[in-house]
Length: 418
Image (cartoon, rainbow, N blue to C red; front, side):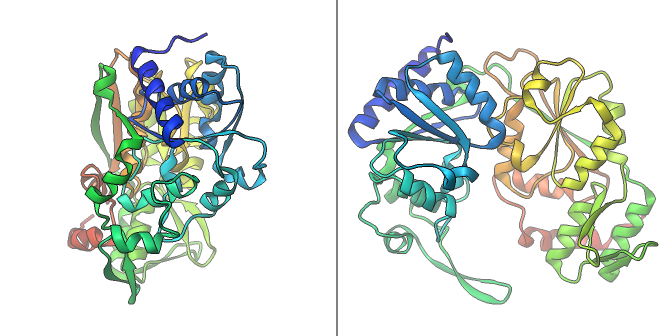
């Protein structure tokens, strides 16, 4: 049986007290501080009999190990949010929602939130997330809404809630006027919700090593720069195989450049991705020779490049990676950024960068753990004269890279030279 750390025992006791009084506890513990084990212990102290634990698919095996190590008296079903609609509402007496911010879509509730609300009726819930409201405090409404004991229970829907807790603004999206509900009244929301949160940071947990980030710049093939420059200038490019790459709007141009500078692109007349340049993967293979690395990529076609360059050394199973000495772990950023532990890696390598600041924050934490003594090394592999470094400068400031930023940067791309 695993021994919990003193701070985990303390937080579990405090969470149990919240559950007894409010039926809700929100553990806002930073990644790698052990919030899964803490939540499982809190459920045991509360007296849960049969738990539903919802998480991301790639995190399931890790949570199963924590449950087996803790060996509580209750039974548990661990599954991913995409399977909520298959579950029975009468089976469980306790719910744990890992990465709970995924329930925070607004102004309309997501399907997963709607489906979970039916299952969670009159049941105590532990919410888990290191980033409960990564983009806006408005994301808290539907997370709590799934609970029968929501602190916002007096508000029937998001719109009635927003009248009191959101400073609404008008904005235009594709020349259509829409209402922006993201400017939430933080202080007012905190008055109703603050007592439900237990926060804990990596510094509080005594993490020894901080992530050390480095940028590596790779010269791409001359044909890649010829393609991107033509696309910037003419907004269309036709390959020798009659494949058409179209960028007739600024948004499409931003997306195409994001793909091209890492070696792939979706061609418009075939609606499929093609590979154009494996320079990044070849560079990574040489630069990190004999090192144990994990690689995160953005687009599915980038996975194919990595498989071709690294061959049989590749695994997509984090457990196989952690238990091996010769495997290279690869994962798409979106699916691998949450819930998995890659702390045995010598380095984490980012093949591309996501537009999302949340992806940046969570993906880089995969290499950390409390007892890690060797350096936590994170490498960003960017194309020389590409778009990635511009994206990086935005997401590290906790902002998403949007079309607004691209328009400001666009003058740089117009002057690119071979």
